[in-house]
Amino acid sequence: MPADSIAAFYRGNKHFAVETVAAATPGPGEVAIRIAYCGICGTDMHVYHGNMDARVGLNRIVGHEMSGTVAAVGADVDGVVVGEDVVVRPLDSCGACPACVAGHRHLCHKLKFLGLDTDGAMQDVWVVPAHTVHRLPEGMKLDHAALIEPVAVACHDVRLSGLRAGEDVVVIGGGPIGVLVAMVAREAGGKVMISEVNPNRLSIARKLGFDGVNPIEEDLAAAIDTRTGGKGAEVVFEVSGTQPGVDAMTAVAATRARIVMVAIHATKPQIDLFQFFWRELKLIGARVYEPEDYEQAIALVAAGAIDADTIITDVSPLADIQKAFEALDRSPTALKSLIRIGGDA
Image 1: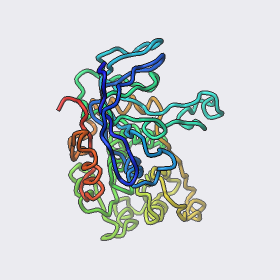
Image 2 (image 1 turned 90 degrees about the vertical axis):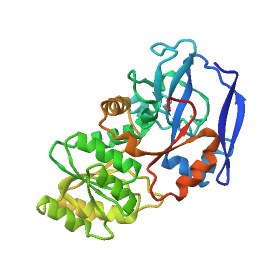
Image 3 (image 1 turned 45 degrees about the horizontal axis):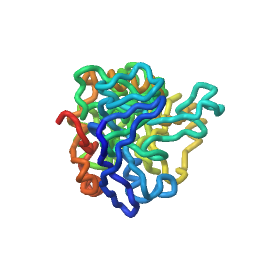
Image 4 (image 1 turned 180 degrees about the vertical axis):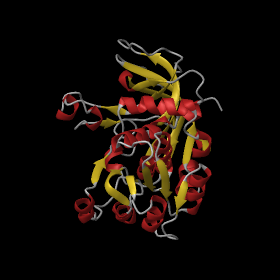
């Protein structure tokens, strides 16, 4: 274990400070991980914009989409070995609330999200509860492994949808999570179309082999009707977080379709409840992931089912974290930006 660690602290007002701190050591039930890569996610961008200051404060190390290597283990830790490559499922539940007792620990009433409610992975060495650690298969590239957390989000969304092979799927929103949902849905046998207003992101979706529609240029409901013989899509994922996306999710849905709400909406959207009555639709909420979603995500990335090299659009060193956030904030083309902290590239 190193004596010192480099860490990037969010200080408020769109500012990060990179500082040297004493490296933490793992206590009982904890694991210390030398971080290789950490992705910048949409939630991190909300922090950057100051929208979560009341939650994270002005002295927080953010980051949770990570990969790394076990540097040390504390007492009472089994199944985790120094030198293993790992990722972290960044959820720490209380274990005693009604949700935890019912077996839904990812919906814990007192859930701590590591990297928001506690310090995260934008540092050399990150100490986490051992139960959050998932081992990686030998030989997996650590930059690719940094995608496992958002892929697990997509795995959870698709699993909750009940998608069956051969069903028509519409993903509304072609950002990083939307594209990953589309990839996982395609792997599950769905016939997937992506709706996206950003022409650069739509171009990437098409490069990845998806049928894509820009709803500004083409009526989405009519396009789905044409492609499905007037039936509509059996599964719809709302990933845009916009009112037009919510309007579209009922307009493109087939009879008895399942609609999965993936996006977090900043304000309460208006929903066409008449369509839920008229077509007997189902609306499914999906929040984060469970352990089996992480294991599926690891397997998909290991098998090459996720086009990681296309999803990862840029990599910056930790020393340039400020520039990386600024660049991502104004980029019309980026999908997934990674911060390189150690690693294999």
